[in-house]
Length: 244
Image (cartoon, rainbow, N blue to C red; front, side, top):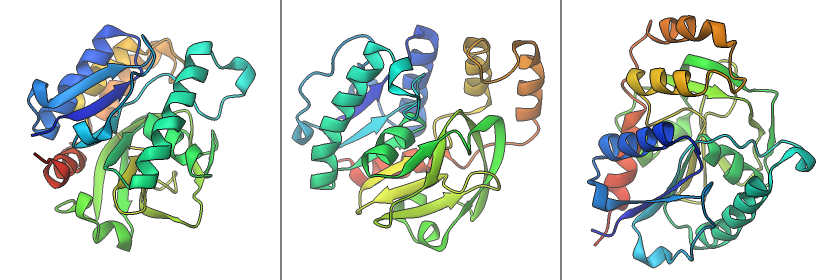
């Protein structure tokens, strides 16, 4: 099988390695079937899409909607590199799944409105499928409403007409969308279980997502509901697009 490509931007090794392990585990991928590139560390190498089954973008510290003058040189570089890759991905309708930071990158690229209006506190929300989502193969087997972990400073406020909204939550109008047939992004985290969320709360407790003194309470609230369904999105993505 041709590997999948994970484009990561988390500078903290614990969080970056945890994300990679979770993508492998919930995607049903052996490590040699998920090639990771850490964009926060080095420029994106030349990507030959024909060498991969699909592209996955993980989460990270960057907010696409931040003013240009507060973005770091690394973030500006990553945004240029992602836009260049998306030129080919969208043009070819190449399999792509952007999780978390993927919403900002793909949403901005296609002309959506991305800002902080619908940012979400770290925790559990109920995600509901639209009719288009219920009919979409990446959401096969996923209930019409399910619990998912979120935690984002920015979100999609408005999609352009050529994008298809697949899921939403009570506060955030766009939890998942697609462009063309094979290019997807999710606001919720399809790679997170409670252990993974707990680790990220520890790693990011001083990054402005919540009051650091409330870290224990954040985890306690997140523990109140089981989160079991979002991982199907990853499994479905791998099953649908894996190719020799």
